[in-house]
Amino acid sequence: MPFTSLLTLLQSAAVATGNGTPQNVSGYSRLCMQVKGITTATITFECTVNGVDWVALSVSPIGGGAAVTTATADGVFSATVGGLTSVRARISAWTSGTITVTGMISEY
Image (cartoon, rainbow, N blue to C red; front, side, top):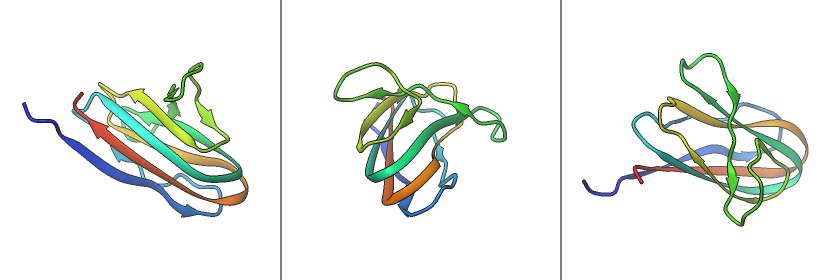
């Protein structure tokens, strides 16, 4: 089976709180998200199975360290998404910064 990946802008130059764009992860196993532009803000990583009820998603910082459900600084985060339908990077608190979050799903 060939390698497949798909990029999605979950937040695009956001300057306020908001849900952003969910990324469809159905049929994929891994998701990496790059957060860029945080000055004073909190990103809450969330997932859903039914498309209605969103819950916190545990992600791992690529640079190492304990798993988290939020980010307050730029970085790259990885998550296992097998069995989920969508993931989002909700800006749950914002004071400053122009935030972009890019997600990439893959089969591996």
